[in-house]
Image (cartoon, rainbow, N blue to C red):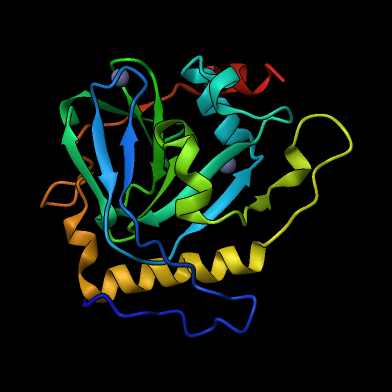
Amino acid sequence: MPDVDFDIFSSTNFQLRTLATMHPIQCKCGAIRGQLEGTGTHNRALCYCTDCRAFARFLGKAPDMLDKQGGTEIFQVAQSRLRFLQGEDRLAAIRLSDKGMVRWYASCCGTPIGNTMANPKISFIGLIHTCLDQAQMNEHFGTSVAVLNVNTALGNPKPKQRGLLGVVARFMWILVTSRISGGYRRSPLFTASGLPRVVPKILPAEELTRLKSAE
Ligand SMILES: [Zn+2]
Ligand SMILES: [Zn+2]
């Protein structure tokens, strides 16, 4: 699909945000390096769900990954925008259950990378801020951050939910355009036969319970 400006709803809340600048991606130790390329719709959101928190704890990265109320900042884009320049062989993945998302991380240093579905045709990735360049996020991604799953935020008062409708609209747009354009076939995270490029480990149920009860 050509790089068309899809910002057709710009006068409404459904603005389809685009990203024109190359943004670096790397794990903390620097073994994995890559970048976000091209333009397209994105979502920037803070997620307070217990699964994102369990993932942070699984990696022992809660202090790096979570805000004071246990939220994870996520940047959602089409997987075809993602390109690895080195260290792809260090990618590892976990699923919190056999139906859970595939949660990618760096095996070298435990840096969380991002979340995808196991189905390669649902071709988004929610990149976790820990692999992005904090100093450039506002400039590259804009300062508008949706706030989701607030009922499971830690402490009180809970943060206010914000921007859900726009997130859903843009999410659907990312999926539909990736599917129609065939962009999902260019994901660096899945093989040509549609399998995750590393076999995700499935977390034992009791381990998930333990991680979630740490709250
Ligand atoms: Zn690393
Ligand atoms: Zn979440």
